[in-house]
View 1 (cartoon, rainbow over the protein chains, first blue to last red):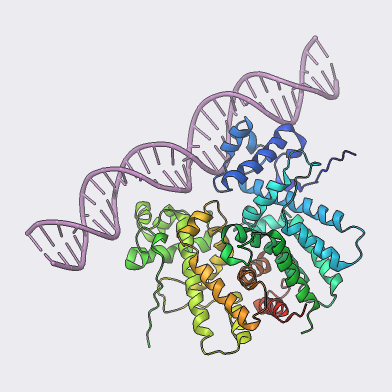
View 2 (view 1 turned 45 degrees about the vertical axis):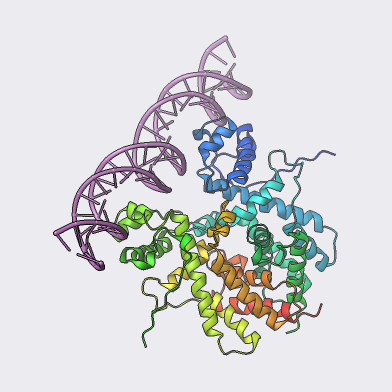
Length: 226
Length: 226
DNA sequence: TTTGTAAAGATAGTATTACTATCTTTCATG
DNA sequence: CATGAAAGATAGTAATACTATCTTTACAAA
């Protein structure tokens, strides 16, 4: 069974849909590689064009600027992850088991999904850890939010928030706990590898411990009696 | 009683110590204002020089580049906050009360500290919320860490981690919980004001609710029996 | 077969950014 | 009064972040 996975993206994310052409797909493929290699700050459309074998002007026909491209990549990632969450928790009744699956998906290394030919999810995951929050930590965040550019992130947060309420309908902070799980899955990973004294995982550098920490955090809150 | 507060900064943070001259203090004062006004991406040394009434070259004598200046500002902030934490929790015996004080200091609006003439802590706090993580979310993080540029952040995290252990010596993740409190105090604040559907505080936009959320999160974990 | 049109390639150009270099002036100190 | 450090003034460069325009390619409808 060979399935192709296509994610429908908000049209405001791009000037021309990169999924609809060879050049567009190359832009996605190589931008992921280049950002991973040198970081978002050192990433330029000129270098990207050289890597692809096209010109700067060609890239600008697809994306307004590199920040928009970053938002596109993050939006793509969160959409893909919401799909994963939906798929992997399907038919699971126990909301606790579902939430554990979500934590696992968020906090452990992603494998490349062969159903998406031009996106390497494993590398994209690493980019999102380091660069993901830069997509919204800007002065433009409200405008970008009005264009619904962060909808995939918010949707995932809502899905997780609902699972939290399934576990404990009286819990008062489902959305904040959801965004905490999402952000901390990534930040603890980044800290573990780069600033290990900010975590308790520096010795083993084992992401399974991040999962245990997040599970403890979440289910303590949800089973709490005070 | 008129007290001056001076924070001793790591010498690798600057080329020339900005606290030792009028121009240096102006650089700190105006960079805080400009970054707050237009965001870190739009902030340039040229604009800063214009605002101060000096030249670009003058700024470069103090800071290697704008990223180093950002790291300086964050390091300054975390040092100042650790002092606040130390001061405000002094003589408090109960570690639970101490930890609540820390959460309060992290999550609520900071007032300008009149003992530091050229730093507006209230504005600096807002900058750290939006721009703070950009100081370490880079490809250079390990090198910068080797120069101990993030020591104030790590020190604060260690202080909070120790308070957590005072509350519950058997808790397994004191440092990760500490970094979670720090990061989430800021992220929930940012989300509340800019992407409110990621939080449960969008309706009232009241930072007191962030404090309640964090207290619930922390003390559920520390009192947990599973 | 011609013609229209959309994408992509090629080339050029501009304002701004992120610096570096150098020379002069100011000013406190011995 | 000499001198040395900080600051001011000016200039210059490579890279960045775009915009504009003109040509070629390709495929599809008339």
